[in-house]
Image 1 (cartoon, one colour):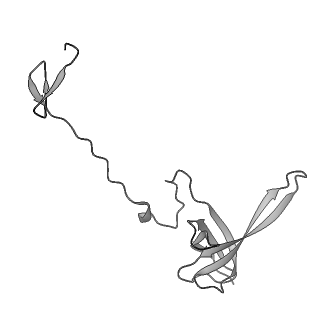
Image 2 (cartoon, rainbow, N blue to C red; image 1 turned 90 degrees about the horizontal axis):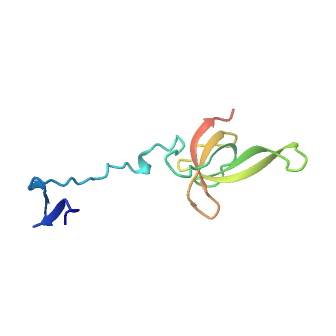
Length: 129
């Protein structure tokens, strides 16, 4: 019993040396703001695996609330080392139908919205002339 300095009686902790009740402090977690509050325009850096952000040109806006965006990337050929341009077509969710053909847009990765849509429009960088 000499190793024990505190013992419990009647749901109250008492310090054995001074025989006075000891107040227990309860630690509560800080208020956490939800991720939905952060603006969609800036990249999400609080996530463990941040969402990808790409820039491309709108090649189709015929569908309702959906764009097709061509994203060009330059990669080095694995064997020959020559720089090769690869084009990828992304299906992008555009809620307000604000982007038109020829606009340069910034898109961000999101959860699957339909069979092909995995991206959402973040901003229109440059309007078509």
